[in-house]
Length: 125
Image 1: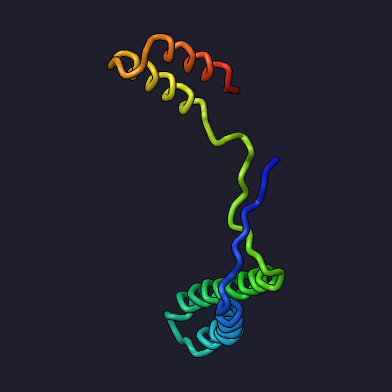
Image 2 (image 1 turned 60 degrees about the horizontal axis):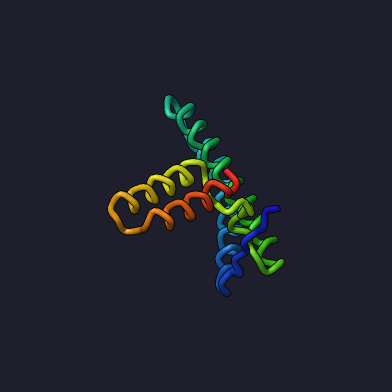
C-alpha cells in the first residue's frame, strides 16, 4: 500500500496565494483590452496573444484556488511512496555484481559470499 508524504506550508503561503489570485483576476480583463485597442494588421496577432494571456490568467487563478484549499487543510501532498522497498531489477543485478567483485578482490571470504548471495537471491525480484 502506498503512503503519502505531506508538507506543512510555511506561514506566508496563504498571503502569496491570495496575491496571486487577485493579480490573476485583475490581469484577466487586460486580454480583452488588448484586442479592443489593436488596429489593422496587428489585430490577428494581438488576438492570439490575448487568448494565450487569458488562458494563462485562468491557469493562475485555478492553481491558486486549488492550493488555497490544500493550505486550508494544513498540508500539501508532495509525494506518494510505494512500499515495494524502492529496489528495481537493475539494483538486484548490481548488488550481485558488487558482491562478486568483493569476493574476487578478496575483501570477503567464500562463506560470506555464499551466505550473502543466497540472501540476495531469496529477496523478492
